[in-house]
Structure formats: structure tokens, C-alpha cells
Length: 269
Image (cartoon, one colour):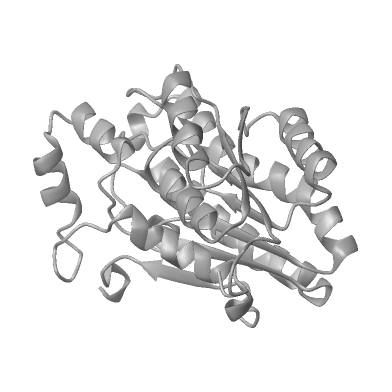
């Protein structure tokens, strides 16, 4: 955060129990911001690997509370419009405002299109796209009133490139880029920026779980998934978090509707 500290910012990060979301929440906490971590913290029927548990979520919140005491946890399902609105209302009631929203929640299910179930379609589209839509809709009125706000949507290289057997995930991440661009145009004159971060392959439990459904070890998954990285090395969650932190800062006030690639050059292909 470039303020130079973020002590006057209030942030909400979804999908924050582990992986990229936890790294993003940690970076914002390190900046001095008040940070709310959000996660569903339970498994979903159409996702063939384990998601974060309630214990994972509690541990994540407690680990950041060792940095400072303005860290909180809210468990809710981003696919639930009323729950998303309640979460934003709770933060605005407790803190007086919500300055920074990071839509990071997402799931990935690999399947050839002929084998994609309606449930697999819904869980990916609803988590990635509807979840971001619901939270943007809830957060933007307050940001508009205050004349300042930052929304960062965590998309993917799949938001710009096709990924075989990840058709639904790719469609959802493309939709998230469209949402980012259109909303940026809508609210720019209110002092709000809306941008996307597009990572390549990050060695998270989501990636490990996805590889396991293909019968791959984590090492084999990373070897296969990083072949299009220019150095063939994976991206660290901290790299994603640094990009989000910059887009959420005053330093990026003239960056709007953009996609910031953190993909080791994958998009160059």
C-alpha cells in the first residue's frame, strides 16, 4: 500500500482461508489495513477436491491477528446474494466504510465439455462471476458516497486464453474480465478503480486438488501446468498478493479496467 501505510483502509478479501486469498489478506494486514477475511470454509458437492475447512479459516484469521488486532473473519457463501450484502453491511456498520474489495473466491473443475454437469457449470460460474457481481453491487454504493474505492478481481490467464478441458472455468474468468472493464467505466468518475489480476499457475491446494483429480502428483501437476510459463517456474502466492496490493493503492490511481498479468509471460504466447 502506498499511503505509505494502509492503516486508514478497510478491506474484504474472499476465498481467504488459504492460497492466494490468504497471501493477499496477509499483504494488506502487513500494510496496517483493517482486513476482513471471508471464506465458505466447507466442501461443495460439485467440486471434486477438498476446500478449506472451518479450522483452516480460523487458523488463517488467527495467524494474521498476530500482526495486529484489526483482522476479522466472516464465513459466508459468495453465491448467496443476501449473505454477500449482509457481509458488506456488517463491515460498514462496524468500521464505517469498506474501501477495498478483493474478489478472489473461485473453484476449478476440469472436464471435457461433454462430461460437464450442470452442477459443475453452476458452481464455477456462480462462485467466480455471481460472487463478484453480488459483492461489487453491495460495496459500490458506499464507495460512491465516499468518492474512493478499490476493487480487485482475481481472474486468471484463463480470463484471456483458452484452457483445454477447463471450458467452464475459462468462460467464468473471461466473464470476470468483462465485469471488471464495464464496471470500471461505470464508476471511474466517483474515484473508484476496478482492475483484475491474472495469475498463471500458482502452487495452491486448488491446483494440487485439480491435479489429483487427473491422477497427478503436485510435482507432475506443476510440471504440466507451467509449461507455458517463460521460465517454466510456478508463480508464488506472494507475487499475486503484491500485484493486488499495488492495484489497491494510491499509486495505481490511474490504472483502471486493466488486467495485470502475473503469469511469468504465459500471455506472450
